[in-house]
Image 1 (spheres, rainbow, N blue to C red):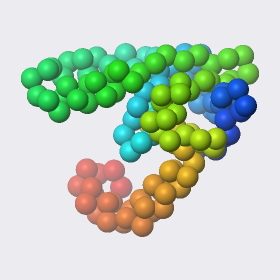
Image 2 (cartoon, helix red, strand yellow):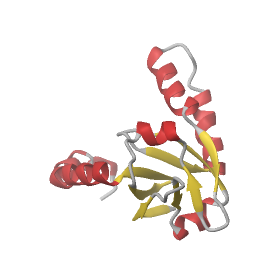
Image 3 (cartoon, rainbow, N blue to C red):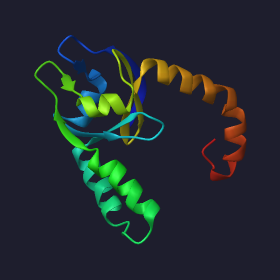
Length: 144
């Protein structure tokens, strides 16, 4: 399970160090794609194979399914971890997520999210203010 929050800085050569805890769980190769809420989703290869199959099985009959399918799958790219644990995020994905120099890696169960640090701070502040209301609305799923 991927959990935790880690802050890192992009180096001069546009590389970023993947948190060591995540490196052990994800392996040497992973998929990065556009995520929701203007962040990037990172999947271990085995998880990506399951996720991409689900997207592929959505069908083409409804426009919203085609849209989400294109959004996630066309933005996906395979990246490798170098010998010292760094990855290179493609420019088009950094632009999508508004990533400048400081990022937050957030473990979210079966994926890692990569956020621009300022965007993450804004998002988490918003959610913290609404957490009690969200928990009450979702209480029937038995998570808390």
